[in-house]
Length: 95
Image (tube, rainbow, N blue to C red; front, side, top):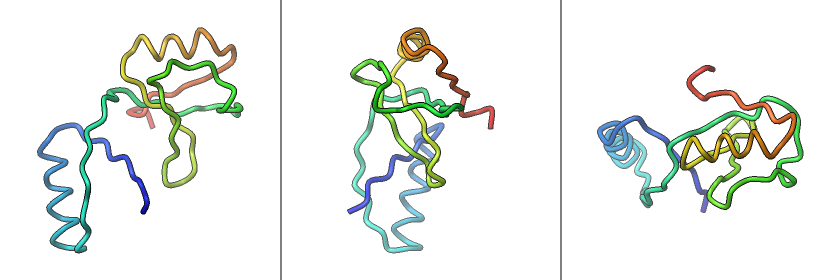
């Protein structure tokens, strides 16, 4: 089973996605809400496994294999930048 994290701006977007997956593609979805509110692309080449991150920060990849970090708060973003010299993050909305 593949795990995919889907981020949406509002509940209606998510409900439309669920409806379309079920009715147009006959895909069953298991929904589990996650606490993440912020997402950042990692802009530079880093060893993700060696990053000093808070326990609730997660590393994920998009469908193109780009590395991203997902955060529960802005404080966690600042922690990552302060504790990992040279780490460069780009706001997801500035693609």
